[in-house]
Image (cartoon, rainbow, N blue to C red):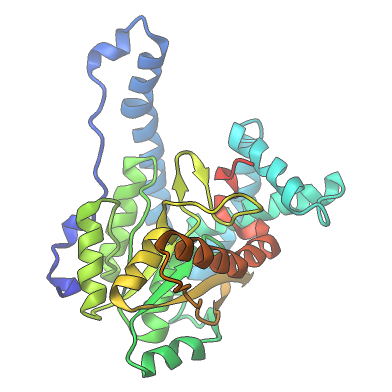
Length: 332
């Protein structure tokens, strides 16, 4: 199967059906709230995001990034009492007690998270410009080139640090390869439409969850038509299962899927991450390949390999916790 033979429309996130008008007048407060969210609040926020996205597109990348940093404190103040914001601060104190041993230290990391997130979303309109504008420094690319020279397939394993969407484009541009994998849809259908159009402009194929997508990814990787890319800090059952942070290894999720796909196609697993160094500048780092366990016990091999993956990614997350977007979804 060739990647570009697939109609691009099939990479679009499925959209939920909206609640009926009767819910707006229901005696059930949750139904009324769901109706307002779907038909009023989400469209309003969607229109605002569309306006901001397209207003930023003509600007230079660095200007977009600075705009995101400027509005970050406003967003932080706006959502200060939200549950996810309280969870952010709690997680920072739990995971980085060395830096968050005082309120000042904890708040500095928290402000850093909001600043990076603000920059990320402001840079979304320019995700294909980081490499052409000289904003990306490559580190450890020899790990990929060595595997590539051996004619082996590659599955990249990554996490949501720095700018994950720009990383997808950067891998394609800096290595001159096709990159594909699964993506996790956003809660808002309007955000999903915006991201779909963004990827369409740059010809980037990522697939929504589902069995059909899994079959396609297997065929594409088996034919060596593209390298795989799996973000292993995915949300499942209202929780982030990787990094482990001392918890049991998961039996489902992107990491497990990547390991199984690597086994089935003979692919090599290479961790990669892209952290922000300053402003709109990033460092795209490739780590040595993960050696897959091969004892013959499938479940035990997956568990061992996940622990090896965790050994590579957990220190990255802890070191750059103020750039880890999924920190808001972690429930410890």
